[in-house]
Image 1 (cartoon, rainbow, N blue to C red):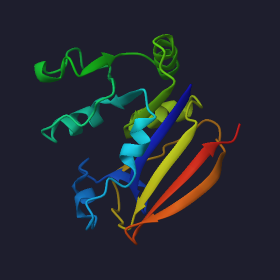
Image 2: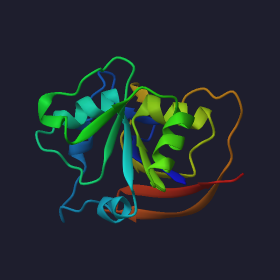
Image 3: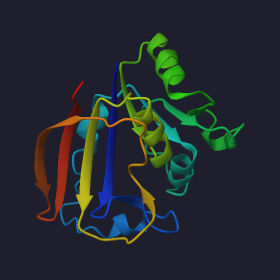
Image 4: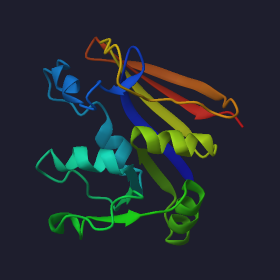
Length: 176
């Protein structure tokens, strides 16, 4: 099984602003209306595992973006809103338990999304690949992509690409 992080961050390492918002991502110039490679990435994914806050953000978009199974990891949510009950499932499990459960369902490639959730999977050394797009903005605070770890984790740089003459998308694989 392979676990992927595909995310954007500010130059100072934040995935959301001081209020938890991601509106700053809408300010990225996109003259060609590109998805910056997200469709290609998601085509190889079997399921999306996201945190509660990410799920709440997705709800605010007004339309459901995913065609893959979605699992919302939460200790506080017990039921999904009715309109999402057939689109996602709640899991109240630890990262290793999630991986084991989804492997038993035949899933091989998981997209892990959401700051705290990514950090919990990293703390258990479960992330195989990081795909991080750096946005040329300094937020000065907010929700960081990375948190404290008990042990350092090493990743190998694979390559970077420049998108729209302003974004840098970098690929890293776990160096075990």
